[in-house]
Length: 273
Image 1: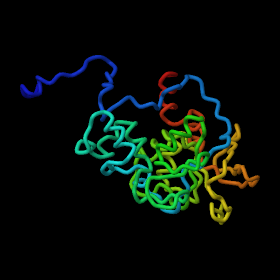
Image 2: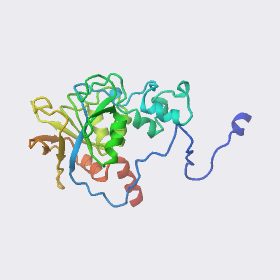
Image 3: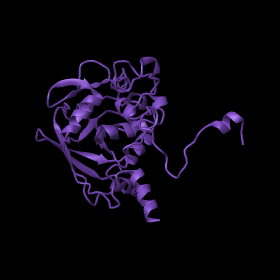
Image 4: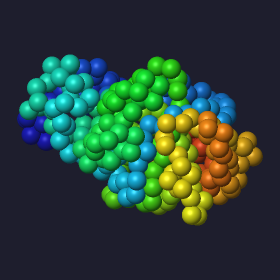
């Protein structure tokens, strides 16, 4: 039964976990908000803006760093508003149970090279206003106008150690699709699991060859009868269009996408059991 110290610990009872709204380490994530038992209607991605225009070998640590929380970062401001001092900020890795911290930490690596801005770091350009902002702040501003977002990247996107937050974080930022020259295998699967569409440039093509600046808007039509590994069309606001490979590699990938991700799929499956 354990020691007296163990026995004196208090623990909640009941079948559901009692979320503590004051906790900065563990909070109820929003992944199931708005979910219905019926499958969602998944139409095209209309007039999406580019949140990030990145190069090759963007690692999962670029996407979701696990190290210390910088004092001038959106995550630091979030924690400071809750009464924490910098010595108590801890690391992103230690706060991965708090989606508010992890969303603010997405693409918060100081070595990130985003071609939409002139200097390296966790910054991007909010296209409509022309303002340079922290990546999270720009995503939040786009969310105010219900603007879908995409990322355009180079080769080996998502390489490095496997991190679930490297897919969860972009999902929370509102990224609906990633167009890459190539994907790391596990990360591609994780994107599908979060309902983010992985799209791959055709051989010999990339953002540079297609003269994409990242300041355009993009419309992506996913056919209702989409098949794994089929070509689909991306339309650009300049009047240009180009084909990409839909990197749903299996019928299971398509099934997860139709459910809005693997989490929603599993909940609906349990409800039907």
